[in-house]
Length: 73
Image 1 (tube, rainbow, N blue to C red):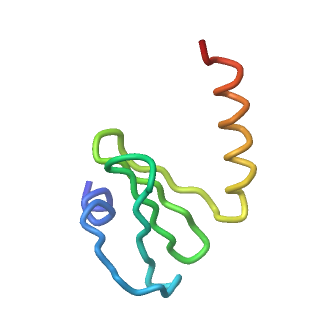
Image 2 (spheres, rainbow, N blue to C red; image 1 turned 45 degrees about the horizontal axis):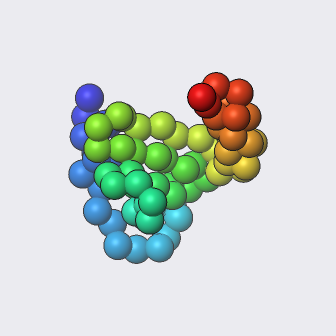
Image 3 (cartoon, helix red, strand yellow; image 1 turned 120 degrees about the vertical axis):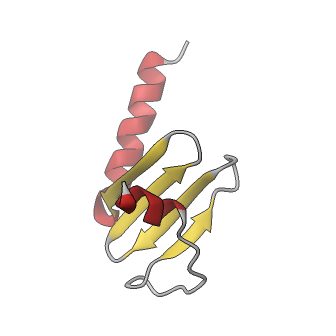
């Protein structure tokens, strides 16, 4: 659980990818993106954290779009 606490308490103001930096979502309250090295970490105040290799980000986004289109009402 210390790993999750470190992610949620992350407040670095640098734009150094090796150190990591945070970008708040413009569209979702409580959603933050953390760029750290070659990873994109997505955190949510209520729903947890998820990390993916940045190079796989577009593939993940496309799969999410497909899931939403298939399962939306």
